[in-house]
Length: 459
Image 1 (cartoon, rainbow, N blue to C red):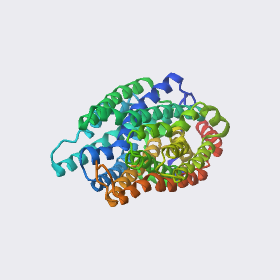
Image 2: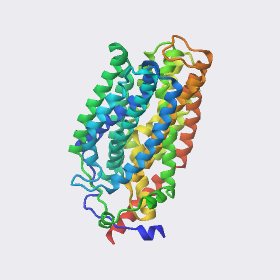
Image 3: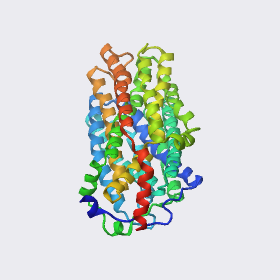
Image 4: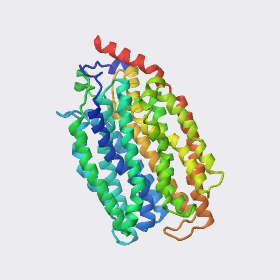
C-alpha cells in the first residue's frame, strides 16, 4: 500500500554519468574542511574542557551526550529540509555555500572558553557547542547527501567515496598529529584557539571550492518535485529498510568506537605510557591500513564489492585491542595493536557514505520514492549519537574513576578507567562492528535493484 501511494518516476539524462576526477577531487577537498572540525571536536574537545578550560569531567560527559542527542533531532530536520530545497544550485549544493563561513567562525568560538567562573564556563560551553551542532549539521547533511546526487552509477559512487576517504584520512591525520604539538608550542588556551582558527579558515575556503566545482546529476522526478514525501511516511520507510537500519546501527557502534580510540587516546599516552607526544605517533599508525588500502581500493571494490572488503578488515581490527592486552604499558605492543586496530577504520573512511547512499536506492526500489536527504540525515544521527555516547563515556568513566584534570599522576581507579576506555570497550565494539557488516548483504542485490529502477523510469 505504501509503495502504491508513493511510487513515482524519475527522469534525468545524466543520472548514470560519472563525475570526472577533478570534480571528485574538489568534492573530497570540501570534505577535508568538514572533517577538520569533526576531528578537532571529537578528539580534543573533551581534553580541552577538562585539562585546559578547567571544566569537570562529569559535566563534560553529560554535555557531550545531551548535545549529541539534540544533534540527532536537527539531523532529521535538516535531511527533510534538503529533500524539500529548490534552488538554481540544486538541493544540497546551496547549503554548502551558505554554511561555510558560519561553521568556520563557530569552530573558533568553541575553543575560546573565557575565564568567567565555573558556572559561566559551563553555560558558554553549552551555548557554543549547541551552536556548532546547528551549523555543522546544516553543512554536513547536505554534503553527505550531495554524494548521492552527483552520480547513481555504482562504481562511480564507490570511487567518489574513495576520494572522500582520502581527504577524510588527511584531515584526521593533520588534526591528530599536529593539533596537540602546535597548541602546546604556543601554550595555554591561546594555543588551542589558534589551532581552531586555522581549522575554521580552512573550512571557509574548502567549502566554497566544493560548491563551485560539483554538479548534481541525479534529478528528482517531476512527480516528486510537485509532491514531496511526507515526513512521517519517509521515516516509516526508513524503519522498514533493513539495510538502512543495519548501517545506522553500524554508525552508532563505529563512531562510539572512534570517539573512544581518539578522544581517550591522549589520556592513555599521557598517564599509561607516560608521554603525551606518543599520541601523534599512535594517531599516524592508526591510519596505516587505510593509507595502504587506498592504493588498491578501486580495484578491490570492483572485484569483491564494498561489503566483503569491509567485513574482512572489520574482523582483522578485532585483534588490535587483544594485542594491547598483552602488556598495556608497553609502547611497542601498544603501537602494534594500534596498527591492527586501524583495519577497523577502513570501512568508515573508504565505504561508509557510499553504503549509506546505496540504501536510498534499496528504499526507492522497495517503496517507490526517494528520500536521499532523510536517509543521510538519519544515518548521520547514528554517527553523532555514537560520537556523543563515546564522549559521554569518556567523561563519565573518568569522573567515576576519580580523574583529576591536569594532575601529574592519577589514582589507580582513574588509570583503570583509562584502560577500560582504550582497550576493553573498543574490543566489544569491534566485535559488534564485524557482526553488523556480516548482516549487510545489499551489494549482491544492488545491480538488480538499479536495473529494475531504470526499467521503471522508462515506462
